[in-house]
Length: 395
Image (cartoon, rainbow, N blue to C red; front, side):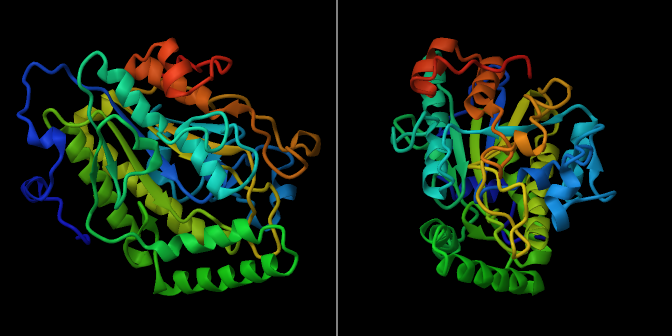
């Protein structure tokens, strides 16, 4: 079926995880689950949730604009056609979008934006631990709380003093996969090397679409393109197995790589978003009844330019789209405000305006779903963020 087995006994036999090593405690109350999915590379929010009803959308997006193939949510927004499972959750009141969200960082650098995204700090390189790790520490003050990351290495969001387990399906990190991202930051403003790199990436993307490569999960080149959805679903099912095990973790983080769509964006995002959708579907179906106590937050380091570039892609932007899903979610419309795509509403005349601080959304979910107090959120989990109001009422 997939590149790895989901047999529960086999998984447990090969892992040295704190929550599997200790005996299950029958007195444990039912655990609420919180999962963060990091979509690395700068996921294009206007493709994830195209505002097809915005009067400026089609002219601004040009060849990247979607039509009837988009999965309608309301009079303004739809979902990408590869997000069919997430769309079904949305229609059931278990998925919502935050269409103009951003971290405090405005540099449009992968290095800096991912650091701020995962540390939860107000500026780059302000702390070396992740906000989800600090949330584990704050929650553990009232009783032991477990966390797990999925991938070959623990992401920054879960690094820090609080203990956290990690699990990988068994492939080494593909370090070469991150090289294009690093080069794009280095040569972004170079008039000669910047366009040359974009053309090279376009060639590589076309090669991947013909079967030479596939979507990357947690830093892994998971499978040929045709198998990417099955591998992603299996990873979601595996994570669900850990989460619903007696005494299992309550918090988790997983990364999906490869969203840096400078060239041939349509084909690239078809693969990447199909993998994201399958991951969520595997988690949803794998959790079964435990889904009703679960919240999933899918975020990215920044959005992308509102206009297409000359190689059928988009460049580093600002306002992004976050997805909030789960059986514990309250039904509703979009999260935050939609600044529209009017020329005067664009950020620096190029990006979706960042109308919602991502920390506000994260604070609200941690407060409502996991019971973290404002003092801990403002000072410990998101340092020096007392001026960022928690967006509550979503759970």
